[in-house]
Length: 143
Image 1 (cartoon, helix red, strand yellow):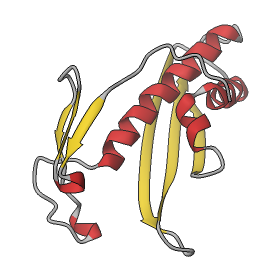
Image 2 (image 1 turned 45 degrees about the vertical axis):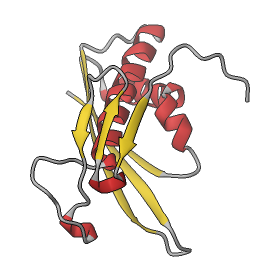
Image 3 (image 1 turned 30 degrees about the vertical axis):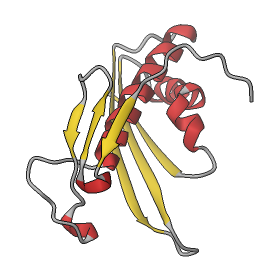
Image 4 (image 1 turned 90 degrees about the vertical axis):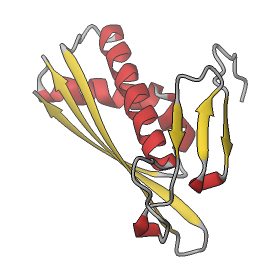
């Protein structure tokens, strides 16, 4: 695959899942803790890599849908993406992720909203990065 890089984000993490992560510009800073559901301490005021991934995927996916709506001349009045990222053990060993995206599209019919979201899914770099590796379920609702 040939890729022309348009932007590169930089971050560092120390202490793994019970540590701290921060973007190089200092705008994103988060203390991390393994949730109690995974056997960790679940410290208050902390987040997880899955929370960070869910937020990034939702934002990127929404932007991709908005962009494709404009390209298709099906301009949605709004796009809201709610993402849920689950982590669990795989039957063959190791861990994996599952993503559910609930996409609410304003100003379009259900059929056109589904077209825009499908096109956004094909464009979104997060969707392309996980394709074939992560189960992604998408529900589209025209509002």
